Image (cartoon, rainbow, N blue to C red; front, side, top):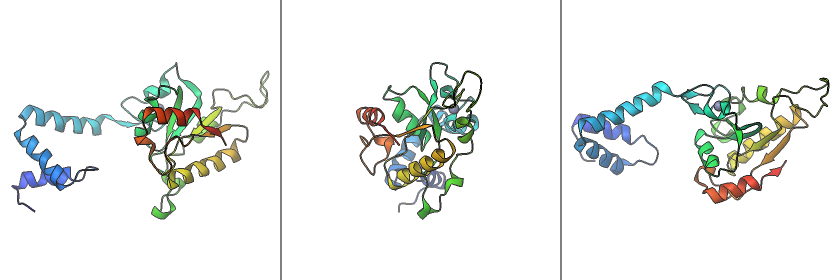
Length: 215
Ligand SMILES: [Zn+2]
């Protein structure tokens, strides 16, 4: 590998850690930044710092947000009884692009992967259960099927990969046990099997949502 002055080598090293960036791309980025004005370079480094300082996870749904609870959780026009469970915050964008979903979300930040030692404890599940547990069985005027302020349908929108399917299966079994009357559905495989829903186009994702099947 070509030898660079220490500040250049350090920047290339940092850029290479980004997903999808190899040595050659990292070098291109570094030379681009070297030619850029001081203001442009400062704007990039400031954006990175602000990202780390101002963003956190929503305490309700685990989405990445600068206000807690996040904009989806507090939006009065969204249906809080419809809950879509996704793997990563970026999956929310994939679903929002369809404009055919008006419920709220829960982000797991991962999938079950026994091979890689990822069990249910590593997923962000602890704040999911309380959202499902607002049943007001026996309250006057309400039958046992009525949920007050709680969720009535859970959509399992994990990717149709081995890990995504295992995660959906785990959630189905767990939620079934604790909330036997809750409707649980799985997105249809308009999303190609084995692929990540992040890369699904809008039409495919819309079909996947519309064709979801009850489990
Ligand atoms: Zn939220």
